[in-house]
Length: 203
Image (cartoon, rainbow, N blue to C red; front, side):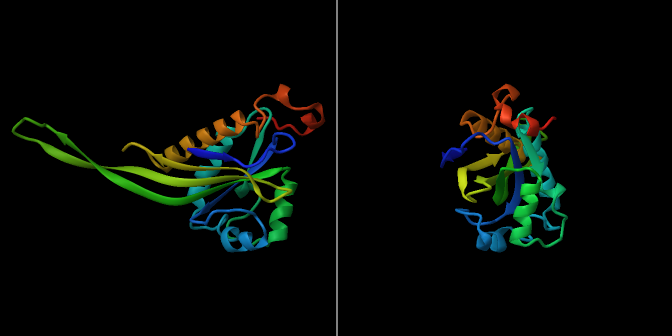
């Protein structure tokens, strides 16, 4: 994973929402034009419901701590419904989120590996097995400025036993580790200033 620290927030985030899209271009600002062209009716479409559930689940499981909450967009935006830009922002804010993690899956592929069994015997055979891979662009967007404060690019691959859930779980672990290391999210409840403790989520 290659990550870029764009800017640091005034304090680490205690509440974030995960939004999943596919095949969007690079995001420099989540303004109304970007939302309408690349997010609207794509982050909650029916076609990608299974992928979205996997991404949201793995990010929630890997990033949520006693000091940081991850909201799943599917809990706030009904699949197949259309939400304009103002409504989208309002509902994100109502969830308590201070920022948005946009996970953009830009490519998906698989490679074929051949394993030969029974080599050097009278009976040998080869079995073709598929190993998946995917490329993700991830952005941590500040909800007030609407611009990325952190971003990353990751080529994630698995062995023949891996599935898409395995790939997204690996991605989420890496993103979580980077955000904690660079101070974008709190790691422990003792790190949270007293002014935020009333809003601190509980697992």
